[in-house]
Image 1: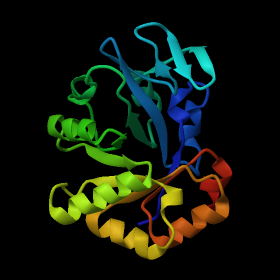
Image 2: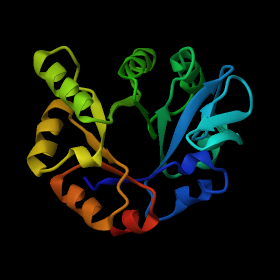
Image 3: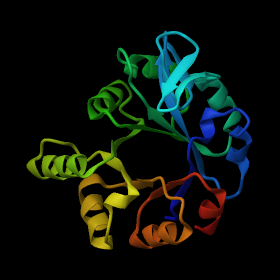
Length: 211
C-alpha cells in the first residue's frame, strides 16, 4: 500500500484545516487536549482551565479547535489525533466523544503508553499507536514485545531513530505498522518510503507531494 502522507499540526489551526482537501494530504494531525471535559486541538500545553497555553516561548492565548469542528471539516482526509495528557485522564472524554461516531478514518497516537492502553480499552476498534521519542523508549518497546509484556501495538517514531531498512523491518515485525515523524527533508522522506514505513508526517506540502 502507498505511504500515508500526514500534514503535521494542521488540525490545530482553523485557517489551515482546508488543506485537508489538498491532493498531497492523506491525513491531518492535531494535538488533542481535554480541558474541563471538552476535547480541543492546539499545540501549547493548556494552563488550567484558562484560555492560555504555556510553551518554551512563554504564555500564549489559545484559540482551540473543538474536536467536533475537526470531524466536521475533515471530510475526505483521515485524522490523526496526538492525545496529550496534562491533568487527569482524557481517555474517558475521548471515548465519550467518539463512541457514536465513525472511527474508520481516525488514528490516535500517545506519548504516554499507559494512556494509549486506556484508550484501547475504552475503544478497542480504534486505531491507536504508541509514540516513540527516544532510544530509551525504542529499546523498551522492542524488549517488551520480545518478552511478551507489550502487545503488538502500532508505533509512530521520531525518524532520526531509524538508520537502516533492517531497523524498520525489525520494528514492523513487532508492531505491524510503523509511522515516522516529523520529516521535512524530501530526500529523507523518499528514503523512508523506500524502507517501507506506512505513514510519514511532515510540516511541508512539498515533502508530502514528492511521495
